[in-house]
Length: 131
Image (cartoon, helix red, strand yellow):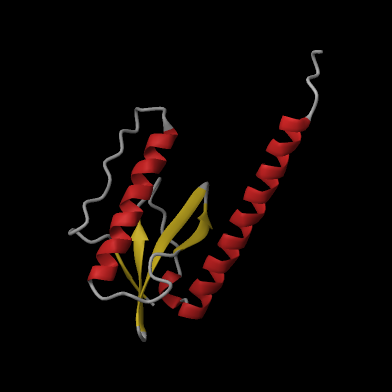
């Protein structure tokens, strides 16, 4: 599958790495991801999976790619977040492999989100230890 760098038409986020507020960094990355998806749709990548993110664990972070679909043509766009890791064999993966990765990541995220919600509910219903 072909892999492209971010398009110049969509300015990438500028991150102030001296700011300890990681939520601000995440918000800028989310905004860029949304703008990139909108740009891809405008360029004709209107498939149902356009905008979905594939994640590959690399060192202490992830290599992130956005899938762009247009009928029978699919490409990936590298997302330069964090350390900007790249997956070494990404060009060799088929669309089927990319979709399997996306589905797997989505399932893990749902699982941990559900577990986090259960933990928060249990904490909210627990009696105070200090009384």
